[in-house]
Image (cartoon, rainbow, N blue to C red; front, side):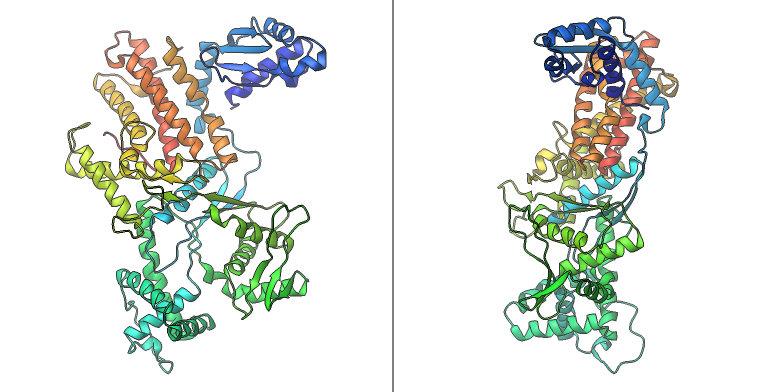
Length: 590
C-alpha cells in the first residue's frame, strides 16, 4: 500500500494543478511545528517567482481547492505562504485498518529485489570476543534484518581473521609447550587425534603469551614466521593443528554470538581465498594494473579529482607476502564469482575508511566487480567508558563481551526480583533478565548513529526510563498486560475493531503508527538502524501519553474500549516487529 505521506502529497499535488499551478509544487512533509498542524506544504514559496505572485496568494488558491477534500479536516494558508494541514480522523482510521489487514503493515516490497552481502563480525580466531567486537556484530545484524524485512536476499559473512602470523605464533607456542605432539613430527603418517590438544581457555592464553614473546625475542618471531609459511604451504601436521584451532574457536564464537542473537550465513575467513591469490596477482600483473614500487607490488588508485592523498593499494609486500588488502580483494573476487551480489556492505571501524577506499577503488579499477555493484563502507565509532576512553575492565584490561553481557544480566535480574514490576518465578526472572539485558546492550548501541563514538553507561542503558531498551520492553509489557486483562474480562482482543480517534493523544498515536512504512524504507536506504530506535522511542512515548490519559480497562463504553484495544494490538505488533529488526525480543511481562 502507498505510504500515508504519498497519499497526502497526491491530494495536494492535484489541488495545485486544479488551481492552475505546477503539480510538483505540492510535496507535503511532516510538520516541523506540530503545535500548529500535522503536515505542511511549502510549494507556494517555490512557485512565487515562477508565477510572479505573492506566495500567500498561491497558498490561498490551493487551500480553496482543498476545502471539500475527503482527506483534510483543516487546510490553512499562512503568511508568507505556507499550507498548514490536518487530516481527518476517518481517513486516518481507514488507513490504519488497511495497514492492520496487510502483510508487513502495508510495506511495499521493492520493484527490484537486491542480493546483498554484509561483511560483519570480523573476529580473529583464538581470541575472545571483547567489547570492541560489539558494534560490528550488532549493527551488521540489524542492517541485515532490515534489508530482509524489505524483501531483499541478504547473506551475512563473519569474515574471520584465521590466517597469517597469529596462526604461526600459536603453533610455535604449542610446539614449545608440547613438542611431543605428533603434529610436529614431519615423519608421522598416521591419523591425527580427533580431539584438540587444548581448550578454548588455553588457546586464549596461548596467543597473547606468544604475541608478547615475539616482540622481545627475534628468534622466536622468526620461528613463528617459519611456522606461518609451513601452514600456508600445506604442511600436513600444521594444517591439522590449524583445523583444531578453527574448530575450537568457531564453537566458542558461535556460543557468544548466539547470546547476542547474531548469526551468520557464511563462516568464512581469510584462509578461504588463500588459493585464489596467486591467480589474482598474475591477472593484475598481466593486465597492467599492478606494478612494482620499492620491491612491493601495488595498484595506483589515486584519481585526478582527489583533494587528499590516496596511497597506492599494496597487493604484495616486498618479500612476496600477502596483506589484508590481498585477502579482501580475493574475497571480493570470490563473492562476485560465487554469489554475484548487487551490493557488499562492510560494517567496520570508521578508522579503516581510507583502507577500504583503497580496496574499493582497486576492485573497480581491476574489474573485480561490475560497475553497477555497490561497495559500501559503513564505519562505526568506538565504544567508550564513562571517562570517554576505550571501554576497559576495572583492572584496566579490555572488557570481554561475555563479561559485559553477564554484568548487565545480573543488574537486570536484581531489578526484576527487587519488587519492581510483576512477580515471577526465578526461572522466568532469569529469562526476562536476559531479554532485558540484550535490549539494553543492543538498543544502547543502535540508538546512536553508527559513525559516532558513544559512552557505554550500564546504569543508563539498563534503566527502565528514558531512551533505553528496557523502557521499550516495559511499554510492550504494559500493552500485553492490558490485553491479557481485557481477555480475562471476557473481551476478544482479536475481534476488536479500530475506530476514529476521540482525543488528541489517540490521534497522535494513530499518526505515529501510520509512519511505519516510511521509517523502515528510510532506515534501509540510509543503512541506519538508529532511525528504527528513534521511531520506537517516539512511538512508546506517544503510546504512554495516551495510556495515562485513558482508563482503558474501566471504560464502560464497550465499543470505545474495543477500539482502544485494537489500537493497542496494532501498537504492540509494530513495536515487536521493530525490536526484531534491531535484534532483540520482548518478554510477556516485566
